Image 1: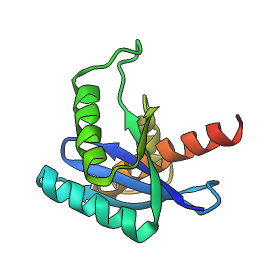
Image 2: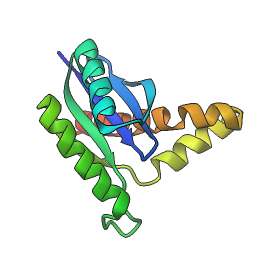
Image 3: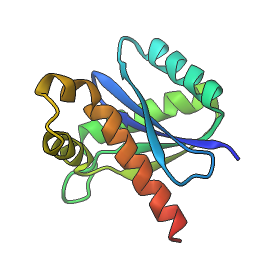
Image 4: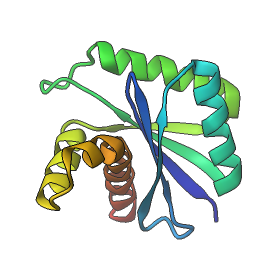
Length: 139
């Protein structure tokens, strides 16, 4: 079996999570500080090879009414560039409120604001991927 990668793509960072081999749980891998599209794609490609990933789930930010806003369009453009580089199946997952949920769980865990900033995107990627894995398991 291979792993599934979950991504929370933002303007400044990309949160990265990967499933276990059974496809049951999502683990946070890292938060990539975005420098250039070339570097971002290279770093993701390295993780894909290292973790033996064969599918990618990207959080798609939608407006509360379900429409796509500017951030959603940026995410789709990013996914198109990633697909050209790695040629893997990419699925989108409605990520409304995942970053809010990530912040809330870090606050409840009494994580300092400085530390929260470093891990919130990775935790959002975990929530995106875990939601997707749970949905697949319950189909």
